[in-house]
Length: 252
Image 1 (cartoon, helix red, strand yellow):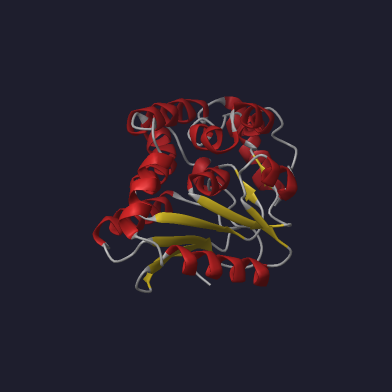
Image 2: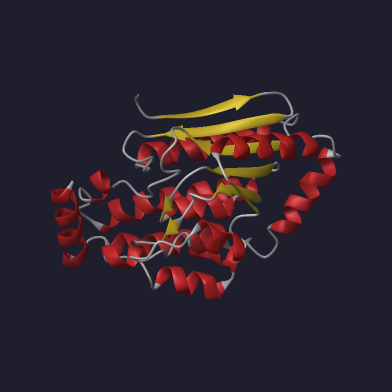
């Protein structure tokens, strides 16, 4: 299968799904498409609940595309790439609908940022997470605010400073990254269907107002996340990072 990003409108419930055969990693083009699909939600006044999901049954999201990272040759290109994650998170933050995250498998780096930018996030017992950025020579600068908002600074510090360690789904559940853990993907889908079905029965104006409250004190993120993207864009040019990516790619 080839890569895709889809917005499917089912009336009161919409789905945004992405897929990349390379571990559901996200190159710039897919980040741009994700941003556009979340921005499209502003026009869907009949939709009150959105489900974010990825295709396949393995990883939910492998984070940044290493194929693209290794090609970045200057600060402008680096900032532009990492701004892609900033724009997706901000589009999710501004969407008037409640966003449910369907995290069926492992998440790395930017994938955790997407999970934390959802308003209510469900995973499975296999949905372990890892912030690998520091090992790559950069850092989880762009996704940091989203993770801190959901799990707190202490959890973010633990993730950021242990880039080689997978944290279990149970750990993520205890920290508030996940609000529910299913034993299987089928159970996960059943719970999401139940939750979405319940939510659409409520007053959509009340849901929209709650969404604003959930995201209070994040009004500076339009600027903050782009500033963070510039830090990552600079560090990705370092000899350390270039050598790490080449070594990683040679192992594949």
